Amino acid sequence: MVEVDGEPEIVLVEPVPVAVLRESVAVEELTSFYDRAFDAVADELERQQVGRVGPALAVYRGTPGATVDVAAGFPVQRPVDTAAGITGTELPGGMVVQALHVGAYDRLGETYERLRAFAADQGVELADVMWESYLTEPTPEADPASMRTRVSWLLRG
Image (tube, rainbow, N blue to C red; front, side, top):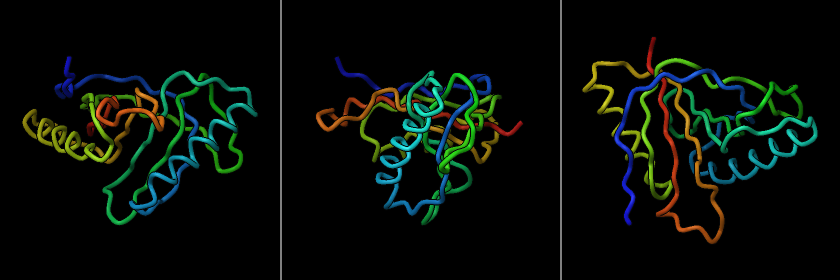
């Protein structure tokens, strides 16, 4: 069975508390940032005894260029205390356009373009906050073609 990307849709999402490490990162350094951030956030959650309630995620703010304003971490059961660069914040609630991306991460740009086109067709305006929820945990033995990522882009209210 071949799985295809999900069609974009507009949905209402509730705010979700998250624990993240946020930095401005050069695009070519994103992979090493994710590795460092996910490990650091997981360690801090364990130290504070705060449980994860969802898959790893990355939150982007603004328009990416040579650098990206990115925060990486996990949804959590309760807010965390700021420590070691790890902060507690929220994924915003509200209307989002979202789709399921199936495939390698280096093709996520195609899903963002689909969301942009869908939003334009629907006559809605995209905000400057978007996030990726990594539904399939990447491992060295995983097939990149089978990776599943939910991409959500906040709409202007």
